Amino acid sequence: MKIFSALVFALLAGLAAAPQAYAADGKLAVVAAENFYGDIARQIGGDRIDVVSIMNNPDQDPHLFETTPGVVRQIADAQIVVLNGADYDPWMEKLLSAAPRPGRVVISAAELTGKKPGDNPHLWYAPATIPAVAKALATAFSKADPAHAGDYAARLATTLASLERIGQRAAQIKAKHKGEAVTATEPVFGLMAEALGLTVRNQRFALAVMNDTEPSARDVAAFENDLKQRKVKLFLYNNQVSSKMTEHLLTIAKTAKVPVVGVTETQPAKVSFQDWMLGELDAVDKALMGPSS
Image (cartoon, rainbow, N blue to C red; front, side, top):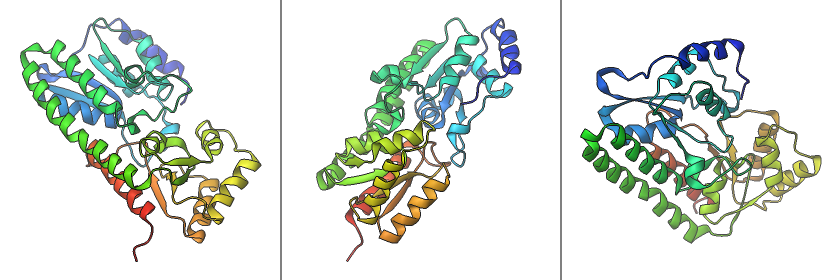
């Protein structure tokens, strides 16, 4: 992520001294660092909240995100903030520190799940993460707006029931494909792959790409060899990030007829978090089953 500019810090200095802001019509002002957390907030908060998701473009490389004065204002006005943590969105933590607000509630997925910098930061792909975030959001909404606590509790129950479909689908896939070897250009899907019981190869390569460093020649050769010799049943890649290396490996996979599935770090438009996850799980299941006879 980009380092803050002097303009952003100057704006923060002015906003930090401003009184607590509230959304229009008495609604709770909520900001989510990523749109999948914003979607869950919306599912629980309904029409009692105004939620803004900062990273919300599924066609944009999330690693190139840059803060703007508009983003700063949104965060400074928020009563409730939800972020990923584990160094995935460090710009959010810096903004919150620079513009403190009395009474603001900050929900960190990393803190809820016991994750820290250095762990795989794509926490929303672990089936247990979003239910934990949903419960924390419902609690925050109920404390900030106790008159509607019953509504939040009812929506939480509905959301949790819907999220159970993801765990159930993951269990089905694990029963069929546990132990099968896959590979990935980045560890985006890694926590879900772990939940599916898959064996993920070439992890040094994936970590290097995630950390914006060049994979070693040895790791590149190992990745290529896995594809050419069909040592893996599936090739996963981040289709929000384009690079010559990814295109090169995709070409090899297609030539070797290794199934390919693209995953994203940002929730696609016009679908719920649940449908996004289930769609990717269906694609992975289909790919692992191989071509139909």
